[in-house]
Image (cartoon, rainbow, N blue to C red; front, side, top):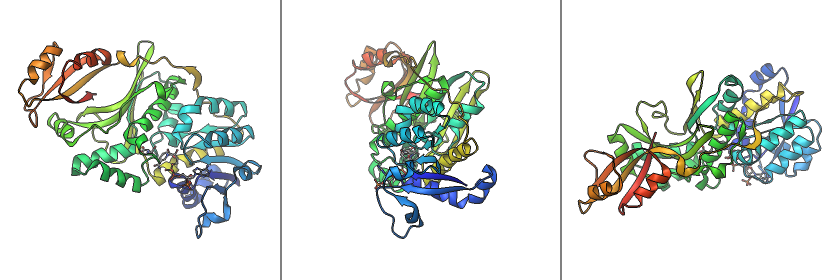
Length: 403
Ligand code: NDP
Ligand code: HSE
């Protein structure tokens, strides 16, 4: 029997206990041994829940129990998760986590520590919820030179935008709904401002390109400026609006960004709706491949954590190599990132076209604009140049990049 401890008995942690319980038979068969949750750590008590028998409030109870081989963390936040991860690994316990904040900030260090201690640090659930995308990159795409990763990486915002688009539901109401469903972060600003997607594209890029990508260095915009009118324009152009995390090799650097993009109906990302996430990976030999599935939620995320637990249980005496060096990857400076842009300007006075042509040499005009507006597209311009020219127009309503 292999004993594991679960840290945090919230949405994901309680899901981990449930998955291990409900699929106990099949998991034991596949591992060759039973996996038993011997401790659950949380701040609260859970009277009446069968977990109360194994509930602890002091992490030292877990650390000092030599029979606990695997620690699965689902508390969230940097501290005390970081300290618990280090202490677990130092004491020879394997550690897995769904906590992207922890992984994005300390992943390289914890991977190195785990290697030195011949244990494993795994984090499948930290990107794409239940989608086995990290395992795909780490093991199935080892032969590839990865050129680009673009994904819908946040379930909450994709769920929100799908419902806002299909049902015209108000931003705040649909956010509350996502929170009730257990999709959102404790502070949902992380979802709607794009910070969560930013951590995930930083993790994906670090794994794909093998070096540290600091999420603080990635230009990030959320969905708070996206209106139903933007979505109506998108429909007119046979597109939809998606919050994308994208990271692409350009020369000897990587160009990375998180922002809402207009996605064409021909793209496989177009039909990714609700809480689903998808990650498109382009390999130099394979071409495009897409990982798709539930990007958040109790059981899908817990399933990914348990996938790590099983992988670890099958490799208790060896470290499975993960290449993610501490050296920083060179990122393209924000000003030099090249994009296409869709721009809406107010045209109450009928003079918008003059102003636009006074600023930009060449634009594609969008026919039949909505609501007394003027709308146009600018192709292949760096963010720096585009912003300089856009600043010459005083009545800009919104800008959305085009994928
Ligand atoms: P929850 O807030 O639902 O659960 C966290 C649990 O951990 C709570 O019960 C909390 O207790 C407990 N906890 C917090 N701090 C401590 C501590 N110091 N000691 C012991 N227990 C503690 O969060 P989620 O389950 O939603 O998320 C957990 C992690 O998984 C986060 O990093 C999140 O980003 C990540 N994640 C979440 C997904 C989702 O769909 N929800 C999907 C993928 C990843 P209390 O409530 O009393 O503070
Ligand atoms: N809040 C996150 C999301 C959870 O909505 O995608 C999954 O990482």
